[in-house]
Amino acid sequence: MLSADDLRLFAEVARRGRLTEAATHLQINHTTVSRHITRLERAVESRLFDRTSDGWVLTDAGLRLLVHAEAIESTMRVAQEDCLSQDSSLSGHIRVIAPDGFGAYLLLPGLGEFQRHHPDLTVEVMMANRHASLTPREFDLAVTIERPQARAVTVRKLADYSLGFYASRAYLKQHLPVRSAEDLYDHVLIWYIDSALDHRTFNLLYEVLPNAQARIQTNNIAGFIQAAEAGLGVALLPSFIADENPRLKKIEAVTTKIESSYWMSFPRDLVRLARVRMMAECISQIAATQPGLFTER
Image (cartoon, rainbow, N blue to C red; front, side, top):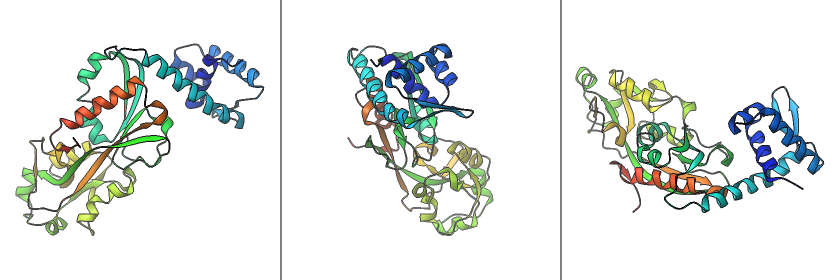
């Protein structure tokens, strides 16, 4: 007879790839985890992991069993959380993946009320600007710049936003005036390292300036802002972030419309989880009340 507890520990080891890491996450002794895995292997009469120096690797039998283990794990979480009242405080963990601009400048500052209502829930916010390779096992909820292509996820548009060119006032006083987008070729441009973004978003700069050469490159928006504030050049930034920065000035002469979107997605087997639903509501509310983000009402 298979044990749901054995399957839960088995799924955690499969996700972590190491027995000790799974035990630490579960807050139990690693020998206890090993005992559960051994019992499960006896029950299914198959070896589920190859124990290697690089970690515990699933065998073919383990891969087949993982599908069922995760389905059972998800069903148990849904059953538990469905029994909670709407006003109950949640516990456990939820992992949110978000682009650095949204995560650092909107999501984290906007979590105050959510955290006060659910003090026992651990919220993991992982910053990531590349999303093409994400799999549903890596997150409970994701905000992405590109529309996710992964299977087995539910996707909806969160908001649209615009971008503009910004620089410090000191920089603009000391350099040639910008009267059109073409004039930006005479300035130092600040943009992403090409490996930091998915293809379409990376190309936003080059859709406006096809022959641009960004002389200052970094992998996150915080770096853009620091560089622009220091007078290193002109940065292409989301307007909902840069318009709030008194140290930066938008170059209004560049009238080309530059637009992008945020998408919200979650694995379909987690949609009914209370923590996922409520975090999605929190994120939607943050987006709906942020000046410069345009949500569908």
